[in-house]
Length: 218
Image (cartoon, rainbow, N blue to C red; front, side, top):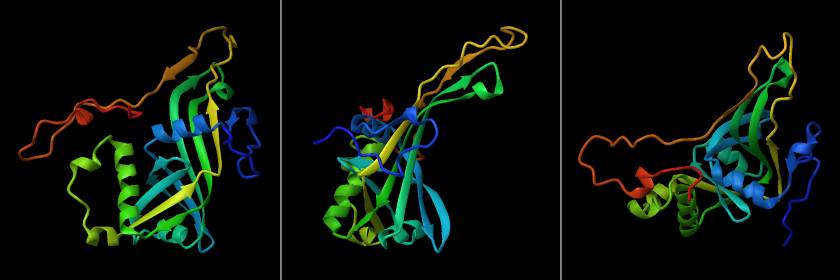
């Protein structure tokens, strides 16, 4: 099995092509760290985009939501999908307007999704999504009822056509005018969880996956 995805006209960037990568390990790592992305398609000739929680299972992405969701309904009917996740690692501050940017990691996936209707398969895939957001959460919850499953749509999108794009650059050492009068450098960014805040009412002792939550999940 190859360790890289094959570039296509949709995944080959025109600008900053040196930032593109088709390495599977890198694509997987970015998708696994991200919790949410932008899911896009065309509905009745108009572009639509909405935030969507995802999870990766091997070489597929999993999405789930209400059967009333217009976006998921269009994808289940065969509309082409485009999904993007972006992680901001730092604010890049140069000494000129053009020398400002972000340090980032992103992945874009193109393809046609598949709807899953079998109840057991829907449960299995939804568990992957829940445990992607917080490890071992699904096992601590009551079983999902058949009635609830009937209201949910579960789709998978293959990772056959995708690309990562990464910028780890730092500001250029340009003195500016007057020389070195403007601070230049990088402000690092990271996701940090705060102390858990319990909901009203009696609570058990919070488990370790709550008290020691972090991204990416260990």
